Length: 275
Image (cartoon, rainbow, N blue to C red):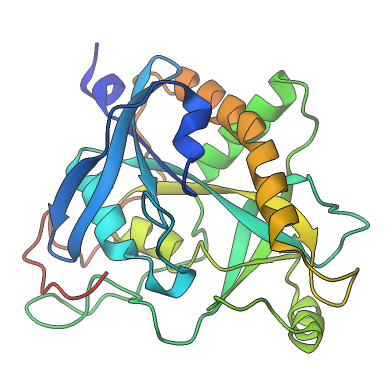
């Protein structure tokens, strides 16, 4: 087995998502310069994988308190170079993207409000780094997810533009109308700065959006119970896609998502800080 075949695949999802993969190891605490997070090791499609639950093992962390820098640093420190993520989203086009739809995030807009750490390169002793974000999401992983969906008879995996809000409150109808005019198609509270931070660490990153509801003002009141139910219902399909991708990765490294050229070799001396 080559070095790249031994490289674990990183997985990011909501609390309890690891149950979709069958047996997983107990939570393992990983210390990072940004705090300690829990991950679980498992096997997926014959490949080692590491799962990080964004909101914590007991779903105690709201979106704006997720320790994203710590979670991604933990994955990278365990050897991860590719990450598959998923997130529950609302649809700004429910006629075209109704609840229950799985979509591939192709681009994103960040409307978080400064409560989240946006970069690892947050001052001395590290250099200033301006991440080039024309292709924030890994094209190779995206292609593999599309082929997996076709192979599994799930049809076309539509590419969407995600807008990420701060949370934890849901959006107002006026905000949804504004986001739609800007080109957003789905809205959620996770995914950024997660994708950008993964790229700063030199990890290829792809995300599946699970449409759980029509966004505010486009249907009736939004039910948290319905969101949770539809997110759980989608787990088996997401797990099947990820398993198919994992089985096909083989020994080929990801060449399309290098770290920024200014970044020092990982692990660099990190200033630390929350999340």
